[in-house]
Length: 354
Ligand SMILES: *Cc1c(COP(=O)(O)O)cnc(C)c1O
Image (cartoon, rainbow, N blue to C red; front, side, top):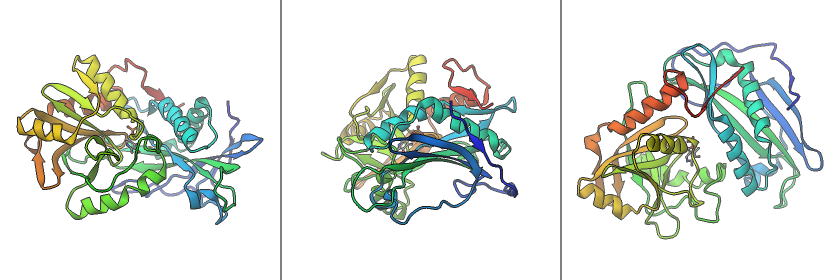
């Protein structure tokens, strides 16, 4: 158990009015805990949200020794505050930390810290349908040193950002650009870790896709550029001839918590769900023979993002006539139903913040 010291702000901010959007508004408080080699994690505290004081030589700024997580706090229909599977974010933090030589953090401490800071700013959780308080835990290497080495000091910080509904008018299908030049990650690299470096590597392709009117990039494997990996900040699923297929966790893709939830639900519903390699050729073939029934991305922010259009080189595939698939809608309704407390939570995914 962490002994968290709380210093409250003396000048609480006005709550935002109007559309919240995503990621630009922050609450009154944040959680911080320091790490020092030889001493371990220490001084867990909740303090007023403010700019950090950091050496310009802090290692995270130069060599990218940094990680992040993302989850949501939201109001259930009963008016209580909830998180969705926060222990999974805690476990994934340690998977990422190991890869980046960042000291591990007990999962219980991670969950306790998230709950404590969300509880502190609970009145910042928006209540309109679909809105939430986005929770962003992250760790940065803070040692002031320009040598390329493992930092001896770190900061674990959690900030909170009230967010608008991802879909204002129901699930909307997106257009996706299958990138055949740049790659995001390779096996043996850090594709499975939630770290900023992977995102830095993704921007050039994202700019290219946006310029062409596509909202996200679908990555192919870094070796043969033949097998499907994942989309921007989402895992990807295909429904082909009655079966659900998603790329297996091979080390170069992010093990999404939404991905895991979707696989669990499909299996519960008796829908065959395969985790395996899937080539872009297989996809094109399935599309041509009319067997590609649905494509959707999965991630915390959107839960489900139906894909209506896929572009690969000169080929543009329209999926399901650009409409939302039956399974995509069912998964969305089920996950959000469990989150809000409208459906039975068989797996104990919903965790109350109290
Ligand atoms: C966070 C993330 C996802 C989605 O993970 P969830 O746990 O479902 O939110 C997928 N891909 C990448 C690259 C990510 O960073």
